[in-house]
Length: 78
Length: 252
Length: 183
Figure 1 (cartoon, each protein chain N blue to C red):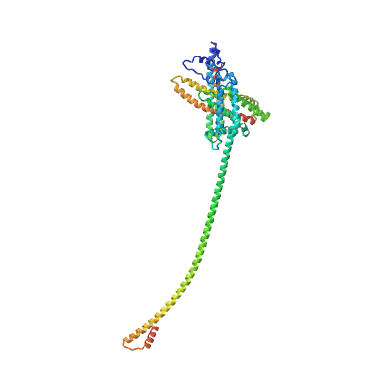
Figure 2 (cartoon, rainbow over the protein chains, first blue to last red):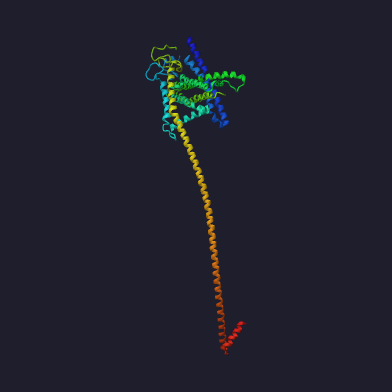
């Protein structure tokens, strides 16, 4: 019984942790969207900033990956 | 918990998204000790062979007008070389072989891991953490060797107001020490997530009604994973370059 | 975890007896040593492949290509300069040739003019001589004609006188005719 409750809590926690991915999605969309908006205003400067774009996306996405990792840990490792 | 599911294989949906990451001896059974040749070893070796084939066999003719293989190799060389030169400056170019090593290993591990039944070494936190901590310690030691104590000015943001500087220094130091963690988990997490998601979709294919959707979803995920494989290798490399730049030119 | 691991050799703390993963395989400490060891081997291998063979070779190929391209561009530049020079030389030759032609034409013109003048002078002289000759001939002829007319007139007058029945000696008739012709 006790183990079941722990397991239930872990699954609920894993589900809650998945919400963090939505935040990462917003962040990545924000980065890419702002990049596109800036690139359309000044297309000549866009090519030089793709590296920055990818770094920004990587940082935003890493946090989503962290929440995914927490979910996985709750599912499989706790 | 997950182990319980493995007992009853008969019927129903069975998800084993994590089984693909199991390290097992390649020849025969038995325990995995540190020198055992495992599936991880084999796929790392294949990555090394792929690097060798692309960059050594592909360029063996040294032709001025390149063949297809040679131009791909030159493209990779030029891509990383330009990245190192752009971000680290001229004095970063002598670290180019190390960065190229990391990039080629990661990109080939990622791509070879996309083959069906393959094992992805970069999906394991142990592998990426070794690379990330190697970069972290290498860069930190290099920074102190090159700049001495003035390397610490990396944490002292001289452009900020004086009152804010101690707080900023604290934040900078924390973010500096979090770097290897995020650096390694980003790569391993992306690789693991993609493969696990594909596996989960594959699990849905057992239900006939959902199977077409499942196959379409696997195809789409596979395309995304190809993109992610390259982008994560690129991001790992470019962050290495950024950290190296901080070590070479710590002043803001 | 929930199920007790059976005492099989394959089953460790990370893998169940059915070959499934227990927990996350990524966090299984048993495998860390193996992965790290082989990762280091792989990275060192790649590093030596790259730094000893591949990168110098690709670098030299790229440098060589750059050199070839630069040389080709320089050669093309040279050829272009040469072409420009050749064009200038050609233009100059053309202008010279034109001037020469002009000169030859004017010289020829002058020659022809001189010849022409000489010929005209000669022709004029000849014409004048011929005209003088002709003049003389004409005047001779005229004088001859006059005389003839006179003789004819005398003869005619004598004949007319004879025909009219008179007799006239030649002297009188000729004197009369002469007087009449003078008149």
